[in-house]
Amino acid sequence: MTVRESGEMYLETIYILSQSSSGVRGIDVGAYMGFSKPSVSRAIGVLKKEGLVTTDDQGFIRLTETGMKRAEVIYERHTLLTRLLINIGVDEKTAAEDACRIEHYISEETFEAIKNHVRKYGKK
Image (cartoon, rainbow, N blue to C red):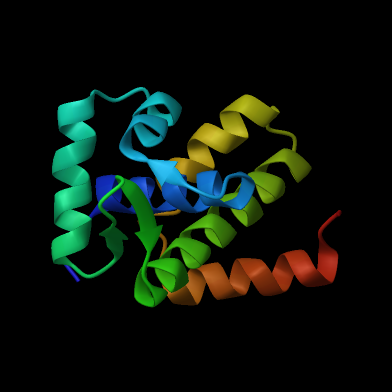
């Protein structure tokens, strides 16, 4: 897939918003991310083209099965990396911001090693 960091951020946002709402619209995504409606529309168009989201005639955005799997991986990376950084002494705000950057570039091998380490030694 050709979706890059910004696309992954949109997927993660749609995933997060869908956990607390029965319907997610572009305006919700824009408000959460602080992006304009045209930016959100362009990004959603790319995600639709990649088969990661669908939209209905009422404007609700839904993750496809593939989109959901990808979003869950991104979200898991974000939450685990944030927790790891907090556990080693980074303040919560900085940890979340840094985790957001790291989650898009870390290899699967390194992430799995971190996940195993956190399971074995990490604080809850």
